[in-house]
Image (cartoon, rainbow over all chains, first blue to last red; front, top):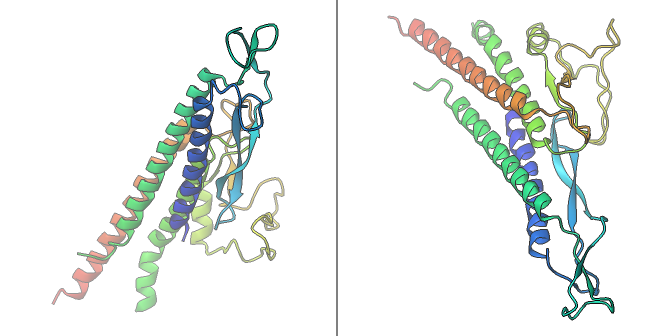
Length: 135
Length: 140
């Protein structure tokens, strides 16, 4: 039954968007983490989405293919009082672009809402189908 | 008698099925709005409905699929450049995006709402038909 598959499709998109929101939260929280477990500054992370087959051959859902590390150059800040400053007084800070992350956050949240609405519409349609023949 | 009842309801039954398929496809388009290189698809409702009413089973000549990743084998038809009637087709690109995604959220939301309303219209008509039949049966 194809309408039931809408739940799988929208559900997969919702969890993918939630994971994207999760990486945004991680990036924003660590925007100033000059060091991490391996001693290097935090690197921004981005999710890669991919279409994935669901129960129906024609309609596909979404999955997070991988989480990649952003390879853009790190921010270098002049702060000689910082404990991690090098001998010239510069500190390497994470390559998180806060503006980009905010845009990413709004986009993920809107996409999530869209899928919630899709799911609700399918639910209403199915419930209405169940009332066929009732007086 | 029973096949008469079946016949009377079969048009809207087919309509509901095709509307359901289309709703699923549009949901997949909305779900993949951020997937790179995803191409939005939709079915030509008229063609799909015509082949459904004519009783063409689109699974009749399909090759066996042993993995969900296998592609559909399209049925041989006279015009090899186009898909079989009622098969999903790619949407034309109005404003392409850098990542190769062709989902236009305005179009998809519009079509999703439209298709949902038409689905409910078919449901209302089926209910009305059933009421008519019941009235005929209980007329004495």
